[in-house]
Length: 300
Length: 262
Image 1 (cartoon, helix red, strand yellow):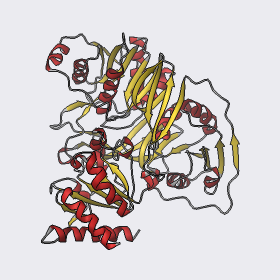
Image 2: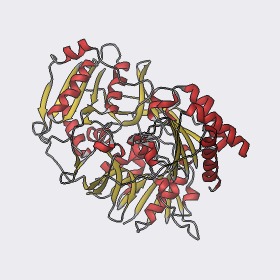
Image 3: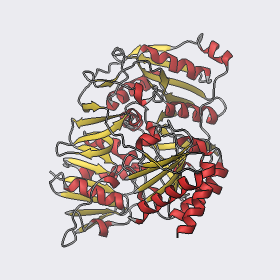
């Protein structure tokens, strides 16, 4: 029985997903929607390229026959994967589980629950087991000597009751936040959009970092929702996460549990963020950040 | 338009980590001193529906949970939902099996009848499975759009805007359709007026049980094999120095050290 991976393009998440799938054993069949089939073919045993634009109902229709007979189906934790995974499991008579940080051969998936305050190991009872994973934090698969064969499939048009009539990108740069190596992030304590624009963004530029924010800052409308990191925002895995005026509630920490180093600037010495940070400073960010920018500029 | 908003009552996710305990035998969180609250994404869903509400629409709120979930529905009525229905669960813990929850909700939808638009939160603050809306759509044989943050009508057609990691997508949908709702600066739930809270307690509430709906308890989707509180506390090194200048200098050096070794 094969393991199927589903990709929307090729990125660090795809590499991690292929790595997770490879370690489950069995034949690895990768399905690619959009670009990236040739990159995926360096890791999988068999590749199907679905020549279609993303649409939830159309993709489900195309994926069901391709996944028939699979033991496990793995996806990353992007919007499309999360949207499809439970429904794909349902149509194949399987079970799904999401936001996994680990998966073993028995398809037991470790995930955070209760807003990151606890961890659960979930055992899937039906076959296929469908799991969406924080794929970026998984080690990549070894590359093959020769690329796998790519079969291109053009699914028939379906009569869908929903239609995507407009797509808009609002990213700050071309790079994905999820792939960023350095992130500067601000919370409720920043106090308003000006703090992000005038203090944090210039600092991020100096550090070559991407910007992120807590849910509170996004909900207040200070920064776009695409910046949100946490349990219900993006799950990031940078080498350095600089948390500025972020208390560090478990829901926020759930989004950065794979960060290698956390540094904190916070006025409150009892803020939970200091229990997770490797280093930090207890001080008002308004005093620290201008000085910090000066120091960093001089050190360059 | 006949709109249904599914709502779940959960253990307050804001309960501090130091007060959070696990019942190892039941593999559930202990209630302890924590309060029960409406899952935030369900409130975002209701707020989205309330703001959307076209002329002549009716908004029904539905919950599957313990008898205490009545509080969630009363609050929703106070926020100005029109009608409420509660599927009472024998077990006092909220359902952790998303397929079972979806089946109960689907049976309730059939029993209550005739919804054009069904909203759920994107996930719940307790188990956070993020599956109930999607599985409900499958149970009902309806299309589903996930992570939406606003609804509108354009020339009589339903438009649904949803978030993606890089921006957003705008859908046009025929009804009936299931939509899962995420948070946005525009759908922060309103605070009900005191008067409406009082009035909400006098409004009728339809009640039934999963057994009456003909949906048996099930336990063959997945199983919680382990539940534990991870031990992960690193010791934070606070930068030293007599003056702010010295401390920030230390901080700058450490940041450069970490980023230079990348």
